[in-house]
Length: 138
Image (cartoon, rainbow, N blue to C red; front, side, top):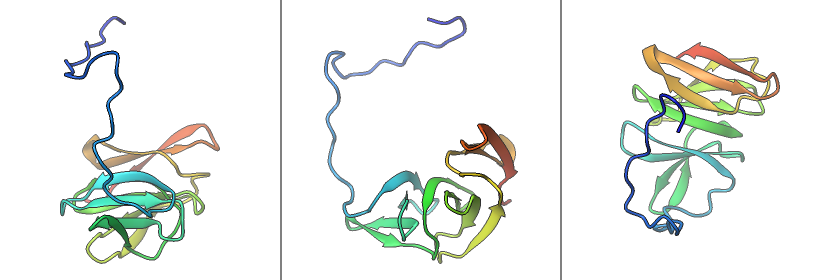
């Protein structure tokens, strides 16, 4: 173990076996690449397809908004933050009505996204080999 590294928490699964899937939540989502739980408790999937954001309902994805090629999603403060890989953007989306606002432009290939403390977003740009920072909506 590395110095300063914490041990893994106990796990009830046998060490020699891999856990099995516990079911399928939804089908027919296209190329779903990211998932987040919104403040409304709904599950949202971003997809590298014509429908960039889907709300899971009754085992299917219902499109939310009018954008495409979503790559990653995080939820905070009642909004969803989504990277649009083809546009090089990060957008904030109101999941209640699909309205969105562009927060960041000029990311070469906006892919990884993480919510940081103090209302900031970290955005991976693999084209530049960099992590950019942006402010989330208050």
